Length: 533
Image 1: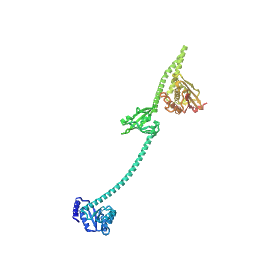
Image 2: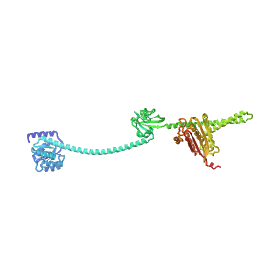
Image 3: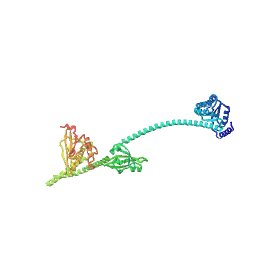
Image 4: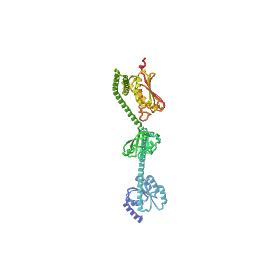
């Protein structure tokens, strides 16, 4: 070895001492012992485990046992040359880094080695010690890098497999959650649309409808598919350009609590309730049409007033009955006194007749105002019951001189079983309806009784406006009325219908628009009376 080689070897040894690398396994294969010794001497401070072999066959045996990380082989060797040997090394230890020692005349061998065994580095003879150390060190670093890359590759593959499995599980969970959310959304939509109360989700800042149910669309007289987005609720529902007066939505959003208000639109009343979403600019609004409910309340109040007036009238009639009896008795006693002039007797006769008339009215009023009880039911004369009701009704006609009441009461009718007081109420209700049907309080009312087969009947006929055919199926419904507000409660015919049914009777209605109506009530004759001669 030259002096320059020795000096470079010394520098290499110093560099190796200053920058030691991790311990590794190194295999040297060369047929010249002195070269093996020289290389071992140069690399002795590298803290590597070094094994040597003098030919390729011995090198392969050492390879199987030693498993080196770096292999240095000479090119020219007896038997198997360096290229063939390193090719076998590549097959048995693919990750081992391969270095070849070559002479100046081995350029063709170098190209062959590159193509066949993928040599890591070449070291020319004679070598530079420092270059040799750095080359071996680079080989070990390359081996470590490949090993780390393989480890990272395995770790990456394992992580990729885990990620793939996690992704599959996540996709399955997402799919399941999506199905559950879709089912929940569908159930919510069905529940929302099945509610009979009109509901809408409204944006507070501009009153825009964001979601509505079928009942809400029906209030607007549109289909649910026509519910627009971002159209103000007051415009969609009522065709208004400005928010409804009494709308509770601003108050609900200001307080964060539910609020109620009443909205009037198109002659109808709606109770509107607004329930704001927490932390949102939207609210659920409900709309309840209370028009009929309010009308019913007013009618019930009027009915209660009528009942109170009836009780008061009964009490007053009872109190009047006593002084009337005294007046009648004294008038009769005075008319029996001797020496009365014709004029006095005539005056006393008028007093007696007037007192009897008042007494008759009071008795009819007492009968009408008395509460119906089961024990009050008895056999009675239908014509007499109808006449009592007519007596009370005539007092109302005093202020209507253009209304005529004509009676056609038949005598000798079989008696019927029931409560004459409640049936008299039916007669009065029918007479009252007939009177209200007369235009301009002018016309004729007829009240008659009679018999038809095994039934007796009473009928009220008026010459009024008649009933339209479309209203006929509903005239006996509670609270149904075609009269203007304040002129009827809608309860008269429904109460009359219930009373007649309770007596086993039936109604018959004959009407002609513009000509008048006839209400006939048929009541059964008890069987025991039918058998009488």
